[in-house]
Image (cartoon, rainbow, N blue to C red):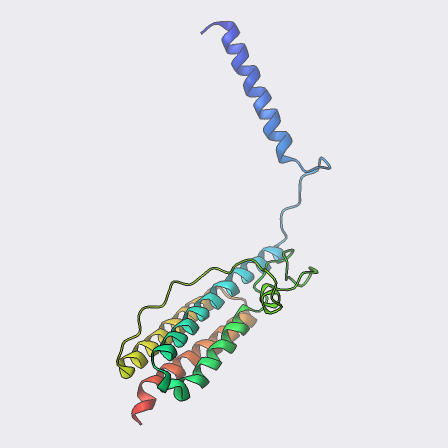
Length: 190
């Protein structure tokens, strides 16, 4: 390689590095501050809340599928479904990250509030479509009880990483899920 080729290569590399460094700085020429420990904890909790609420929404969709396939079970399942819906709402409260629309420090309403108002909001992650519901009502209840147990197990596993206040809520919701599973299976026999 000739001296001119190396010089051209070095000059191009230096220019590219300068452009890259210029793009990394903020408009005022100062570097942005890294998030504080409190901001990181709040973001982690918001992600945890969003995941827990999504788990609950999957269970809620399962209730809806069973009720659609077996309307005669409505009297038995309606109170349990209402409880699951309340749990989903409680688990998802505060699921936005600081500085995003819907967070306590922002002027925008939470995504659930904008959906309720009929405006467009960012789409929440969708759960997979529920599995087909068995034609036999007893089998459908057994599968619903299994879904309740799986959801309770997921919430229980999440306790390890949850902040204390949210861990108490998760524990309560997991206990309610275990009670629902009992009512859907063993409770029906008694």
